[in-house]
Length: 240
Image (tube, rainbow, N blue to C red; front, side):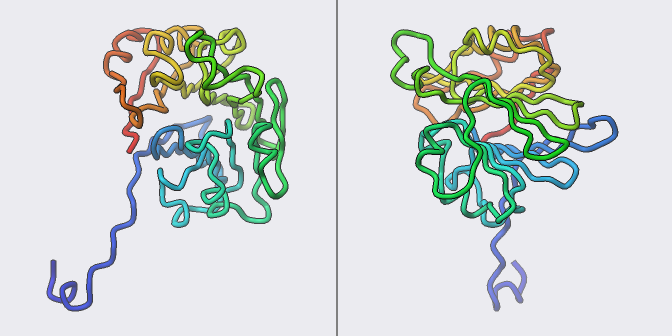
């Protein structure tokens, strides 16, 4: 530390997050990985946040949101403080039914199977997300109508965010997924074996394991990648 830093105090470092940049027909898609299920996309100057939670990122220091997606109402996915830190009067907010019921403000209420077009070049489709294993049905019951989302950018790339789910018939039926974020953590969502099943059904070009690392039972993501060797590009990124 320099003399001046000692004298006046050093400025706290800004948080640094893991990112990936992908070329989509000559346009840049930037993905930012925060923690757990909190991620973000930047595309053509638009900032899109998925399941923002204040514990996972310094959202008050990040660019304001053009769009926010919330998959379901659990505290590690739906956080009003994070939404308030990101939103402007023009932010499009898309929420599952249960989250929308507790939201004070304008939003799109998304039900499984619904489609929204919050911008001319962005389409969002909701996919049912729920548990199917008998011992896990209480975590994400089908009747609550939690969502995963497919975000389609410029009709050029389809990005799937699973939310909290197991390999449901609705998931296995999806086609044309280019990039997949599929959850893998126990005891609430998928085992590594189930994630492999889901990814093989989706057939994405790129798979990002996410929603792991904040539970007592660790996920061996390296083993998961080995199980998918030759199936797709498995990209393991740090989730703080």
